Image 1: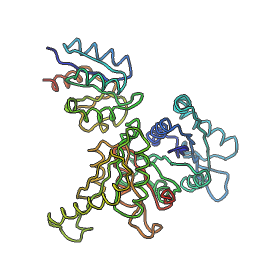
Image 2: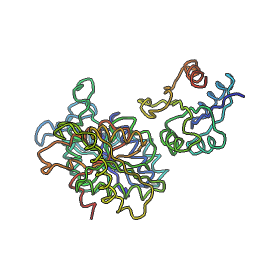
Image 3: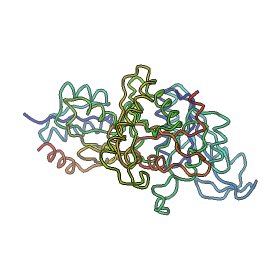
Image 4: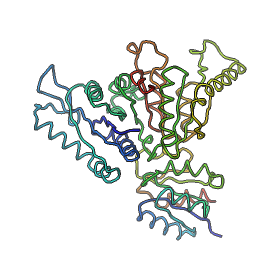
Length: 117
Length: 312
């Protein structure tokens, strides 16, 4: 069974791009446009990896991560931060990687493959 | 909680993080935001020649120039002002003054009585002042020391990435000033639906403060005593509020507070300024407070002795 990735991002263009990229590489993809929807979806269908935007309407990425790590079944899911903000690498200390927009898809896929094995 | 927020800004990139937090808070608490900008310092006395802090040019000050700068500041924050009007149905206004920034900000705060002053980090070019990297700027020092209300500081860009406030860390040294901070932290945590209050004390074990190398038994005795003190002094006043934690760690206080806030993924730290100093005029911003402000991964609210009225 293919591994599942949850994309949490409010930009539909990024969601489309990442969904296509991950599906082309054999992963199953779910997406959410804000932190609350992302949490609900993650609880309903726990993913193997989450890509997370920082700046979103409502709660930002770090608050999503905090809430996620307070849920037993979700707390160890690896997170990759994908954001255009400067200093984004300091936002979520325990993220497996931080990627700045615009990003190189090969670089992202390497991190995804390394993380998911 | 925050009906009036004063955003003291240089209207440059150095204040972008602070502006982000100010407008987020304002949206959450439906606050009025006053954007306050000190455009420059007169070249001498009552001279009309002023060095504009944004452009670095010496200009002849008149009403037209002030109006132009006001418009520039409003243009700089145009998107946030518009979004704020839609989100919170509340207004913003922009005020421009001339003079030394700290003096004008304090004067404006005394006259207009905001509930909170929001400030960013130093506007100094980091390349030109490398040795100052871990020091708060003089404007920040003076305002946190003398402000008539709490001051929220956002120094690192990463401190502005939360999008809200609910997980509050209150750092205490058990002083009277810390009691004021406690009341303030409690007020914030209990006024928010998902508010959480994490109370923290650090036992200072650096030899300069403890005088000698403490044995582990002594350290753990101090930790236990501090926990008991926190229960007596603060937990007893929580009036049934359940979403709290108390922690005491040993180490270098500012390092431990920053680590604790990071571990708790806190989105706000509240501390009292220069809590142990008897004569605040003699000292700069307390070193622990200063270092927490500079290093924290979330906004920091500094409360000084002038805000003690909050406690009443």
